[in-house]
Length: 539
Image (cartoon, rainbow, N blue to C red; front, side, top):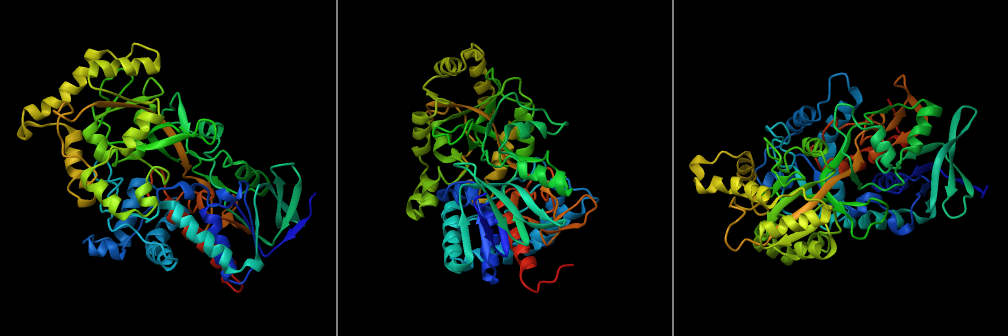
């Protein structure tokens, strides 16, 4: 053993939820130990790489844009889209808590830390039949998740340096019990396997979800959903659910909704992979044709992003191969091609306002050129026959017949030959619907034939499902206390962020309204810190 570290509060995990918990506890006058399994430069976890989108309700920006949002409207959308049943008490309570408190406890709190939002609210996860977000709620942090983490890291280090101990490269795999009561945790050093006892009367679990483990993803995959043959991974391998399992086995903590996940339907291998199978999540172009391995359009209901990510993932997972194709052209790529996260959104990440405006108004070929240069899965050709040959060369097959690819394009383009009065294509209808909202019109092309003169070359992107977040986790009450199998709080043990299913062991249910994850980390963390504050009342 390498020694004993003592504090008032031990926070396990240095992601966003762990950072916020530690910050708020320091401000309450407590001594805090924050232990993280990763290196110092990785503080912030997945939030550091996140795009920074947040679903917020009743904000000043919504009011300025004439969006009549209220907690009641948002709560109804949440329950309907997430399919949360009346028996799911704690997830429903956390959903209500979210919509009622995200304005003050997230939006205003972040503004007080100097963070700003882009002057536009996007409309995501609308639902295939309008059962999702009935109103635009998706706010984007100016500077992406990287600026969010930077601001909070600075606040954390300035809050009370003498009362904060940051431990990096140490992983907690078990908790310390004495006389049946929680006394802290055991941490293992990554470099040499030494153990340290981190003593504290209160432990806050903020170690992330379980989707960093491909084995856990497959083991928890819903029985009523098809499992894809091949998947890429977007969660850190450290988040493998081992501490979840320990709490469940040794303390009878309750894990709920482990099979509910937020995955992405289209991704490519990361050109600078940080771990095995590391994937980049594309934001699929609404105007692109989504094709199967043969180059045929997937249907009869076409796949269009921005309406129901859960349904898209199910459709992709059901395909006979482990991949699909996105077929687009240069015109579509200039305006719609995007990758989720801070890494591939430099204009927002670096605060380059003028360049962002110019690229939004006039489009950009920057990302397409980068993908063609760095990703073997991104192909371009001036003809469909040439593109089919490139697609087959990539897969080592003859699956894509040039005439089939040509027929897929011609069938879609025929909608425009007949004129708008005779159009009857659900993808066109959804694109036109998306373009009704100004913020989305700027990022969505007006429908045109793929074979429009001057729109080439044709582009095909081979994509796979990318795993990301686990929506379930350890069940918690509104104080973020971990509950046992009888629904009683485990003394001294708290859980926040993704580890708690963003509240209640799965507040989102089967589907998220998107943008609920970063705020969910902040809300659960602040709830835990309030409960831990000296003299706090706990019901």
